Length: 296
Image (cartoon, rainbow, N blue to C red; front, side, top):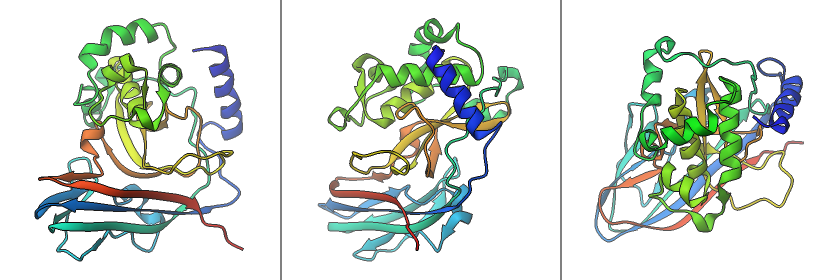
């Protein structure tokens, strides 16, 4: 890890304490989206857009998905615990909308520089899945590169941070670089992408180094970030399993952020797609919002 990265960790650790600091004030965040699809025929669809069950107690009211025109709705919990909604979109235009208020601690992402990496034989069974390669994270093809890059880095938190530092420098962010089918290996070679590409590459490198890592998607606003602010979108980050806990890391922003609202977790983006259509459909309009609710 670079000297600057070590200094940043020490400074953040001094600010946050060994695990996290209790903020002076709570905050409320308004989150939501509107998407409009056009289907040339009735089309079954699945949406993965509700606030994650680990944040349900923070919701002020409900975050139900609203469909226009109204359609029959069914819901289920997938194998990762994400709440999924099923509909059959009618022929023509379908609007999907949600708006909710979420209570938040106002604390930035936790930093625990002394969190240790557990040996594979000491990992709990449920973490082992997140050591394996997946659709967008080709651990078999990135393993040699990962060990060359990070084999000498400190284990544990320091190694995950070294991975984030490298990915943050290696990939140039830009919405013009977005491509739904880009894998971690392709992101490594392309050196360009969006937040999901940063996340896929960091997740793959962590798994190559025997650190369980899982892909996360959700809302992340610009609270505490100076302008100019970019267009709002759903964000991707990841969690690494260290010292018996899952900790948040963000290779795209590579700094602790305030106000993350988790929507879904999985092995990679294939497990947490915001929508899946089983037939032809076109997304004709898309907007996302996540803002602090000012009171007084």
